[in-house]
Length: 103
Image (tube, rainbow, N blue to C red; front, side):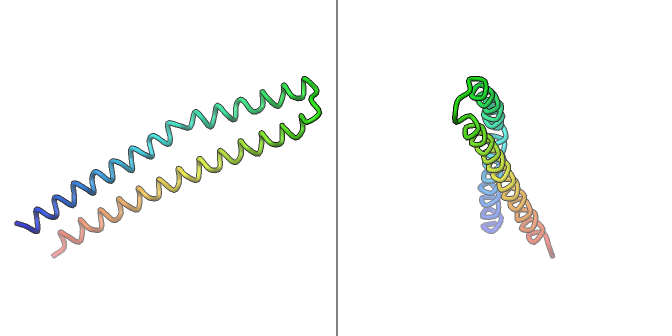
Protein backbone atom coordinates (compact mmCIF):
# COMPACT_ATOMS: atom_id res chain seq x y z
CA UNK A 1 0.00 0.00 0.00
CA UNK A 2 2.89 2.34 0.69
CA UNK A 3 4.18 1.85 -2.86
CA UNK A 4 0.77 2.80 -4.29
CA UNK A 5 0.53 5.84 -2.02
CA UNK A 6 3.99 7.04 -3.09
CA UNK A 7 3.07 6.51 -6.74
CA UNK A 8 -0.14 8.55 -6.33
CA UNK A 9 1.77 11.27 -4.52
CA UNK A 10 4.30 11.35 -7.39
CA UNK A 11 1.50 11.42 -9.95
CA UNK A 12 -0.12 14.47 -8.34
CA UNK A 13 3.15 16.42 -8.31
CA UNK A 14 3.84 15.36 -11.90
CA UNK A 15 0.33 16.38 -12.90
CA UNK A 16 0.86 19.75 -11.23
CA UNK A 17 4.14 20.19 -13.09
CA UNK A 18 2.43 19.30 -16.37
CA UNK A 19 -0.33 21.83 -15.72
CA UNK A 20 2.27 24.47 -14.87
CA UNK A 21 4.13 23.81 -18.14
CA UNK A 22 0.87 24.01 -20.11
CA UNK A 23 -0.09 27.22 -18.31
CA UNK A 24 3.31 28.81 -19.04
CA UNK A 25 3.08 27.85 -22.71
CA UNK A 26 -0.42 29.30 -22.99
CA UNK A 27 0.68 32.53 -21.27
CA UNK A 28 3.62 32.80 -23.66
CA UNK A 29 1.30 32.37 -26.65
CA UNK A 30 -1.04 35.02 -25.26
CA UNK A 31 1.84 37.52 -25.22
CA UNK A 32 2.20 37.28 -28.99
CA UNK A 33 0.18 40.48 -29.38
CA UNK A 34 3.10 42.40 -27.89
CA UNK A 35 5.42 41.14 -30.63
CA UNK A 36 2.81 41.93 -33.28
CA UNK A 37 2.31 45.41 -31.84
CA UNK A 38 6.04 46.17 -31.91
CA UNK A 39 6.32 44.91 -35.46
CA UNK A 40 3.31 46.98 -36.52
CA UNK A 41 4.68 50.19 -34.99
CA UNK A 42 8.13 49.78 -36.55
CA UNK A 43 7.05 50.45 -40.17
CA UNK A 44 5.01 53.44 -39.03
CA UNK A 45 8.04 54.94 -37.28
CA UNK A 46 10.23 54.17 -40.29
CA UNK A 47 7.71 55.83 -42.62
CA UNK A 48 7.58 58.91 -40.41
CA UNK A 49 11.38 59.14 -40.36
CA UNK A 50 11.51 58.97 -44.15
CA UNK A 51 8.58 61.40 -44.54
CA UNK A 52 10.17 63.93 -42.17
CA UNK A 53 13.45 63.49 -44.07
CA UNK A 54 15.53 62.74 -41.02
CA UNK A 55 19.20 62.24 -41.87
CA UNK A 56 19.34 58.93 -39.97
CA UNK A 57 16.10 57.56 -41.47
CA UNK A 58 17.84 54.64 -43.19
CA UNK A 59 19.72 53.69 -40.03
CA UNK A 60 16.53 53.88 -37.96
CA UNK A 61 14.60 51.82 -40.50
CA UNK A 62 17.24 49.10 -40.68
CA UNK A 63 17.51 49.05 -36.88
CA UNK A 64 13.76 48.66 -36.48
CA UNK A 65 13.64 45.84 -39.03
CA UNK A 66 16.50 44.10 -37.21
CA UNK A 67 14.78 44.52 -33.83
CA UNK A 68 11.49 43.14 -35.15
CA UNK A 69 13.18 40.14 -36.75
CA UNK A 70 15.12 39.41 -33.57
CA UNK A 71 12.03 39.66 -31.37
CA UNK A 72 10.06 37.32 -33.64
CA UNK A 73 12.87 34.77 -33.77
CA UNK A 74 13.34 34.84 -30.00
CA UNK A 75 9.61 34.51 -29.35
CA UNK A 76 9.30 31.57 -31.76
CA UNK A 77 12.40 29.88 -30.35
CA UNK A 78 11.17 30.19 -26.79
CA UNK A 79 7.77 28.83 -27.78
CA UNK A 80 9.36 25.80 -29.48
CA UNK A 81 11.55 25.21 -26.43
CA UNK A 82 8.51 25.25 -24.14
CA UNK A 83 6.59 22.91 -26.47
CA UNK A 84 9.50 20.47 -26.53
CA UNK A 85 9.80 20.54 -22.75
CA UNK A 86 6.09 19.78 -22.39
CA UNK A 87 6.27 17.04 -25.01
CA UNK A 88 9.29 15.47 -23.29
CA UNK A 89 7.50 15.62 -19.95
CA UNK A 90 4.42 13.90 -21.39
CA UNK A 91 6.60 11.18 -22.95
CA UNK A 92 8.36 10.56 -19.64
CA UNK A 93 5.01 10.40 -17.89
CA UNK A 94 3.70 7.83 -20.41
CA UNK A 95 6.92 5.85 -20.12
CA UNK A 96 6.72 5.70 -16.31
CA UNK A 97 3.02 4.73 -16.48
CA UNK A 98 3.80 1.97 -18.96
CA UNK A 99 6.64 0.65 -16.82
CA UNK A 100 4.40 0.66 -13.74
CA UNK A 101 1.74 -1.52 -15.37
CA UNK A 102 4.21 -3.79 -17.13
CA UNK A 103 4.22 -7.40 -15.78
